[in-house]
Length: 29
Image (cartoon, rainbow, N blue to C red):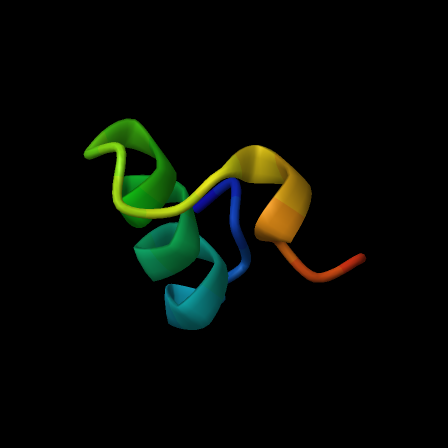
């Protein structure tokens, strides 16, 4: 798994894809 099981990161990326979250709002890794 490319995200090493980081389900939070995956969820945030899904929110960005859905337009519910802006990329600049994502926390730094």
